[in-house]
Image (cartoon, rainbow, N blue to C red):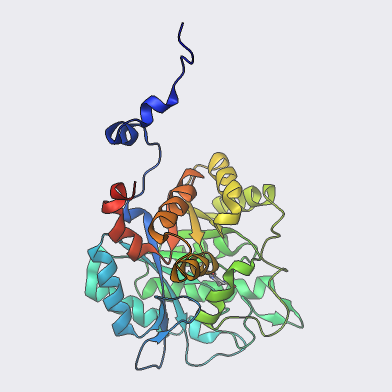
Length: 330
Ligand code: PBG
C-alpha cells in the first residue's frame, strides 16, 4: 500500500482542476461602489486618506459611475456632504438636498442600468456630527426615527431603489418601512446596517464625509466590538422589522460575525469593507510593501467565504476591471 492514499494536492495540480474545485467566486455584480457627492463645489476634491477617491461634484460622480458601469459594477451607494449643517440635519431630507439631486441625475443618465442605494444617516448633515438628534449629551432614539422617515421618503421620491439606514437607532428599519409603505414606496428595498460596530476603521470616512462627532463618540448606539451573538439579535430584529438585506460592518475584523449572521438568517447578507480597510491596503501598496491585486483578491474572497453575498467596497471599480485577469495572478 502506498502512503498517503488521501492526496488533496491532486486537485491543485492543474489550473483547470483548481478552477473546478474552487468554492468561492466573485463577480463585478457582487460589488457595491460607495461614492461621495458634495454640495456647492465646482471641482471634485481628493480625499487625502482615501487615495483614488474624491468628494464628487454631480458631474464627476456621474463620470465615475459610468466608468464603474463599464467594468460591470451596477450598484452604487451614495453619501452626501451638504453645504449647510444644522442641529437636526435638515439637508438630509431637503427636496433639493445633494443626495436627492445626485439620485435624479444618475437615474436620468443610466436609467435602470444602475441600482441606486441611498445611505440614510444624519451624521453628515448635523453640525454636531452625531447620527441623530441630541437631547443634552445623548442621541435621542425616537425623535430621530421621525427624521429618518422623512429622509427615506425624500430619497425614495428622488429615485433611490434601496434605502440603507446606517444610524443604528432602535426601530429604524420598522419606522422607515412604514413611512415608505404609507407614501407609496412599498417597492423600495431596505438594506439594513444591522450589525454596525463602533469602529476605528471608519476614520478615513469621517474625513471623506466630514462627519466626525464634535464631542463624545458613537458607542452609545453602535455595537461593542466584543459582541457577536448580539449581532445575530440585531439582524433578527431588523428582519422582523422588514429589512430585505442585512449588513455587517466593518468586514475584516468581523468575519466571524458575517458567518454567524449568514448561518442564522435567510435574507441576503452584505458586508461593508470600510474606509480604514481600504486605506490600509492603499497605503501599503503605495509603499510597495504588498501586491495590491493579489491582496485584494484574497480580502474580497475572504469576505465572500465568510458568508457575505454582496460587498460594499471602495475598491469596486478597480477590482471589477481586474477580475477577468485574476487567473493570471497565479
Ligand atoms: C454614517 C456612516 C459611517 C460609515 C457609513 N455610514 C460612519 C460612521 O458611522 O461614523 C462608515 C463607512 C466607512 O468607514 O467606509 N453613519
